[in-house]
Image 1 (cartoon, rainbow over the protein chains, first blue to last red):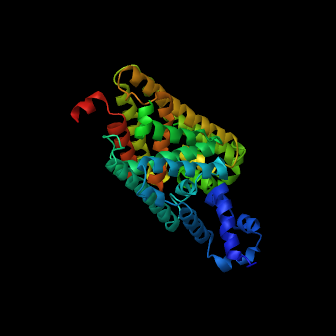
Image 2: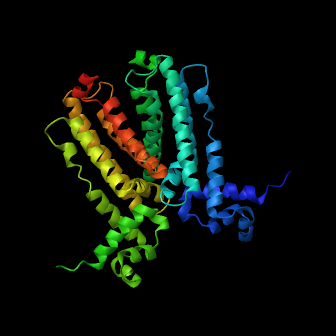
Image 3: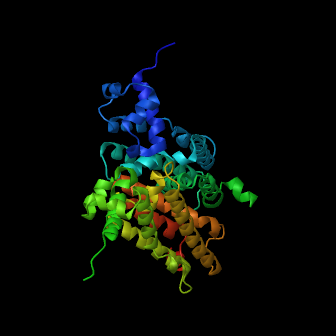
Amino acid sequence: MPQRSAREDLVEAGSRVFLSKGFHAASVNDIVANAGVPKGSFYNHFESKDALALEVVKRYVASYDLSPLRAEEGSPLARLRASFASTVERTVARGVENGCLLGTFSSDFGTYGDEVREYVATALAHWGKAVADCLVAAKKAGELPAQIDPRTFGAYLVDAYEGAVARAKVSHRREPLDAFLATTFDVLLPTKAEKRRR
Amino acid sequence: MPQRSAREDLVEAGSRVFLSKGFHAASVNDIVANAGVPKGSFYNHFESKDALALEVVKRYVASYDLSPLRAEEGSPLARLRASFASTVERTVARGVENGCLLGTFSSDFGTYGDEVREYVATALAHWGKAVADCLVAAKKAGELPAQIDPRTFGAYLVDAYEGAVARAKVSHRREPLDAFLATTFDVLLPTKAEKRRR
């Protein structure tokens, strides 16, 4: 069996500890203890806690596959709903009190450090753009209510999702996430099939 | 001139420091330095940094007047828009990189400490309820699109706002806040006067 590297253990421990405690409350001691590696080895692999946070958030973003949003088959709105529903289930499986790393780091890095902050801002913009591209396809398919501009509504939905995650985190309840899905997809963006059922 | 109390100085300094740095990155040293009071005096007034955070977030919540949302004159949707627009302007005036204390504390207290966490969860619920009450009035006034359930849409709009604040905080731009107002009130909830202009 290949031996796992200490660097990999630190990235995985960092993922767990940053999600649970946020950036500032997580100490290098917490992270090395969680990784089961000696403290001295941390700085062999990462220049700083910030450098680890950047690696962790890059892995986090890469673990979310946005390509279904740009697939070319089926109903774009059904694909969008499935994408958000799968994101909700991952959040619930991790424990809603841990929230979303992009939301947590948006709060932690607003006035601290530019490299992680800019990465998170860009990741949120990319996500909003992918949602917008899916809404453009929905418009072409005749699925989008006429008044909705697909370009601006992509970022709006990501904001509504991140706000729901923050409320789930602080209330320790999944209800805000389920309400996000129901209101977004049953009320604001019903597919033709759903409209017929009304 | 009456002398300001050290306690009051600590609450005001706590408000500034927690908004800017969040809870965990703000030290008692930061707060006493910002207040210009000796460190020893902190614990004469507050048992802990958590106790100060609770007082600070209570003041923060009390500083937002939700009563216009329940006023009985004029267009409910116009009152709702004015309320969110005024909240946006306060956020911008403080500096968008400081975000909203409820959003920041939602992130900071998700897995840390129950008293502040429960207070913030309740404050967000109260805000969502006040928005919902205004939407109920809008429905009675014939202003609400038929498919929108005013009860659930109150919390949805608060989530969308908090998500926009988080994105403004991490991107150092006010655009997400302006986009929140435009999409919410020009697209999702246009007043009759706005619909006629289309």
